[in-house]
Amino acid sequence: MRTNLITPEGFEKLQKELDYLWREYRPEITKKVAWAASLGDRSENADYKENKRLLRQIDSRVRFLRKRLEALKVVHHAKEQDGKVFFGAWVEVENEQGETKSFRIVGPDEIYGNNDYISIDAPMARALLKKEVDDEAVVNTPAGKQVWYINSIRY
Image (cartoon, rainbow, N blue to C red):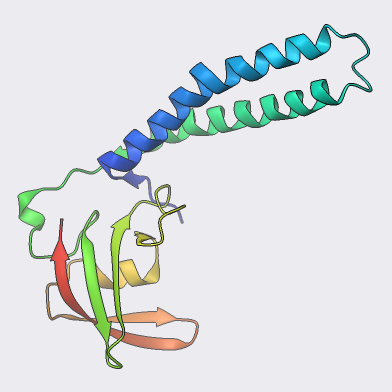
């Protein structure tokens, strides 16, 4: 399951990536391909082969981002959410052993490269939704059920 939700910051980041790939990186690689092709025999031309491979990767990512950005729904914070865990919340939780974790609940497209972000589709996020500070959340994990208590919620 992949939820089509994203924070405004996450949407902007994906949009910037698309703009960079399409307006800057792709034209640069296209020039390199044209230059390498002008050298003659393409079958043994490593520059040509490598840059064509890069061009295919760029085009694939551009197609993915265009489709994905159309499908995503940007979720803005609403004052009614204050005090409860919803999409976009920063949450600190603690278990019975005193171990604490702090993270932000975001869309699946935003978690890469961010160790303190978890997907709304993650079992922990699902267990925390609509809970308040000091509430108990039971999270189903492969090791069994774990109980976490909510210490703080902020947006």
